[in-house]
Length: 427
Ligand code: IMP
Image (tube, rainbow, N blue to C red; front, side, top):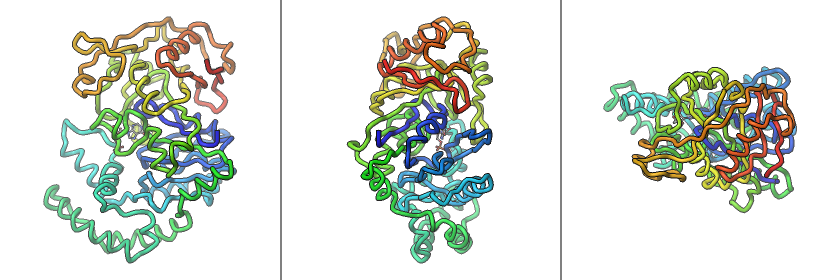
């Protein structure tokens, strides 16, 4: 499997880090292909906890080259702070490579993100306010400033001057805020930030292809997830990039023929942060139980995640749009204490049964889940390592999910630790 994509299949926070970490052993390179520091995952290595937002998780392994691809938006101040944090914990970050084509997140992006949200009032999206959307918007309207512009101070300043003309008009006239000062920003970003960024900047497309040509294993690491995808998610309650598997191709510069394996990470239930439709959302004590036992609070923003039952309708769509070859299911142990577990097998929209995702947003907003309920296993799964260890009810639950979504579940997470997973024979 020289080229593998790991993609979230729900609304993020599926626990991608756990399996990315597991696959990392076989990899020579781990490439982030989209998103920015809106992502966040915590990895526990040898008892030490690492909270990563931007640096690919492969950095924790000496044999891996961690790469930030062209599809990512990079806040260089955040990136350097993360490098400092990792260095202080003894992690060597000198192997990190950042695409010169990646776009920068600059302070006006963050300010505009927060202001736009505030002005949307009750219609707000619940963004992470990290400037992700405004930076991608500038990329699309072709006024973005890229990582490679740091290499040429004259160009950087020219672009900054041009873009601030427009941003400052918006900030002062529309939002009644103070303008940004070109000299101040140029001094910060062309000073220490530039000096420290330069060694990491390179042609990452070339690097990835050299690795693939040498037969090395490359992992493409998605952030966020399928239903936060700008095209395939629950628009407008989405992020501004393409987390789906196709995003790995554009965001890293590889064609689809290079991809051998696409692993979809799914949680045994679902959570969502931020606003937007969520057919299987639970507002009762079972939902509270999932949040408590699953520690469902944002790594990045601390927000309580909205909980719900596993949704096979969404998952069928995720299997399709990502061409999943297999599913890695996380956090099965969070369901251990429940008497019963439910799975949404179809939606009811105005009396009509839908087994595939309705394309019209109004239908999705009105959809009520049609659930099937299975007996719980009421057993602690956290020490189990073999499929045969699992109680019959847990095995039935996995078989049921597999049958519903028509994709094999090859790995099952039964706890937060590195070794807490079960390798299942693909059925
Ligand atoms: P943005 O990516 O900050 O623009 O936020 C857009 C939407 O994506 C909001 O609903 C966020 O809560 C959600 N989002 C962004 N990043 C993540 C993530 O890593 N996990 C879960 N939700 C996320």
